[in-house]
Image (cartoon, helix red, strand yellow):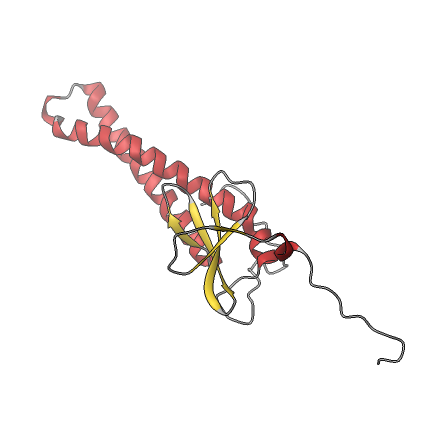
Amino acid sequence: MSTTPNRAGNPAGKPRRSKDEGTLDFPTARQMLPLVRSIVTDIVSSRTALSRLVPEQERLDRHRRELVWQERQRRYQLSEEIRTAESALTSASAELTALGVGLVDADAGEVDFPTRINGRPAAYCWKYGEDALGHWRYSGEQQRRPVPTDWDQPSPTPLRFRGNP
């Protein structure tokens, strides 16, 4: 579970969806980023811990009959640490799923915020270590494209003239 509180921008704490259910608009995806960043940090930390702990556990398991007490104790401790890291990883992944955000690469900490661009399924992309949500791609493509600056601008308000109701 993430150590950062839910920072969603609306009172219900749920992401705002566009008229196409399951897609997010750019402002909403950008508002969700602090929470998603925290969750992805938990995922990357858990994956890093597991990549360090599992080989040590396997080595001790192979030699379990020759272990002295301290090594046996470490073996039991590793089992608990691995369970904790796996549980944290599962919980954090479930949090992303509940938010509607897809985990693309757990090792790199890359996620996709689903959307539609030009009527096609697409996603806003963010990778662990990036400061902001600055890329997008069409579904099925690997290439990340920079988000145009005008996507971040509010849509213009229609002009009203005195003669218009």
